[in-house]
Length: 139
Image 1: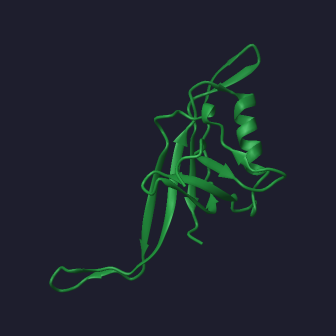
Image 2 (image 1 turned 60 degrees about the horizontal axis):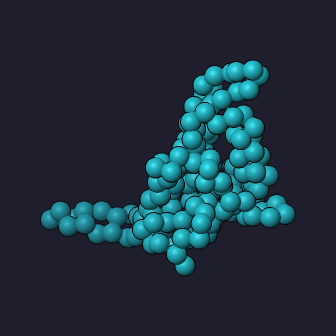
């Protein structure tokens, strides 16, 4: 399945939530399809012996500069409402993996996210770009 007009779709709630492309800085989406090893090593001749056990995505994106508090609240509330394990900030998501030109569906956690206020004008908060990260569990 090729690109289907979303990069991140989070399952849960009454409907799935597609992270709005208009919230994303289009040049910031990065997705690595990481290969995880278990007990890999180099022997005495320097030859690598890999025990690749799992591939899972790790992705980041930045929001557009100067999004309003209402936009950031919309984004966060739609992510939070779909946590399957709230203490771990764990979601079930389908993410676009450019390396595969396909989607990967699995559990991801959202690590702590720093948010910087750019300005406050007429009672409206505007934010600097915020980096969101989704790290695959590899289940």
